[in-house]
Amino acid sequence: MTHLLRFTLLGWMLWTASPALAAASWGKFQKDRCTDSGRRQHSAQLMNVPSNTSWESACQATGATVSGYTFLRPTRCVNKGTAGMWGEFEVVDTTCTPVTECSFPFPRAPSPSPATPAP
Image 1 (spheres, rainbow, N blue to C red):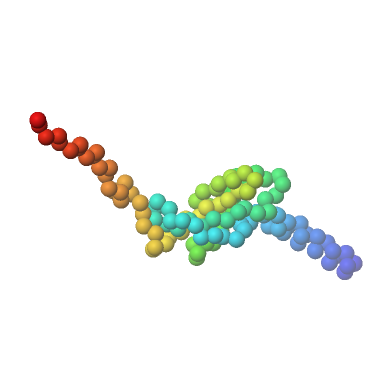
Image 2: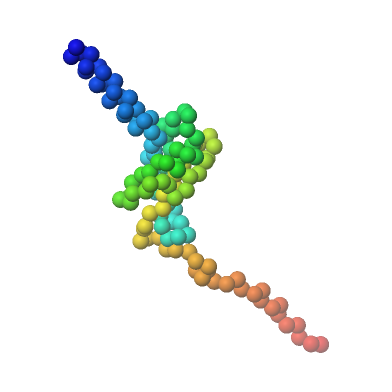
């Protein structure tokens, strides 16, 4: 009877834990570029997507902690085809500067052609 109870309890624990074991997860995060918003982009490939789940829905439902910031979902999900689904997370980074339309000088007007002396 004790063995039956142990196996029943073990089976119940595995059955209730199976969704967590089958959940998608992020691969190794890489530190990417500064974004226009002045934040640092970090990205990772989505791994272990269950066979009955789309990459897109798994990406949107998979949170992460990146550089001390906790996200419920990525800032963006990018389907890279054969390279898989990637999540991009933007985190505050004081070394990044926001880009605004005022950050760039206005285009210069073409310089006038040199005047030709009158004959």
